[in-house]
Image (cartoon, rainbow, N blue to C red; front, side):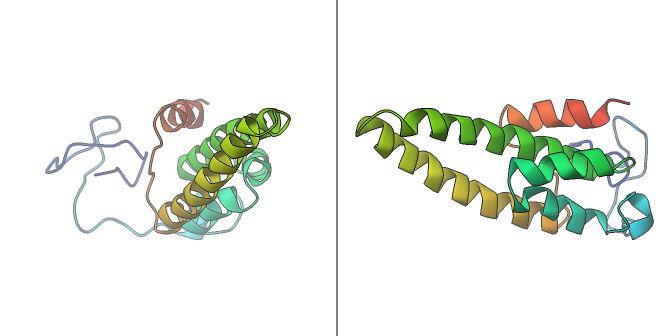
Length: 142
């Protein structure tokens, strides 16, 4: 269960957030557009962080000043799709084996792109291994 205030993952059944102390429960306050500096609802802004891969992540990282939820998705988009893009570009220059591996990375990236947009659009801070933990640390800074 994630805290609606700070986004920290808490154990199921917890009544209060282990990080910020906010009350957790079924009746979470709805997120309003005033929680982001973009004027969009946080789940829409989070989804848009993934639309153009790492490029849209950079755009939202620059324009978003308040929402840790949006910053998390922006950082995760930059890290995930940036690494996949670099790996694809390197493998593309290796004949046959590199082309096959590059195709696999492209399919993996497409599947991740769809899953991450759905998760962000439904308001979830779904963390990928490594990239998600790093993105959470970056989003919580300053």
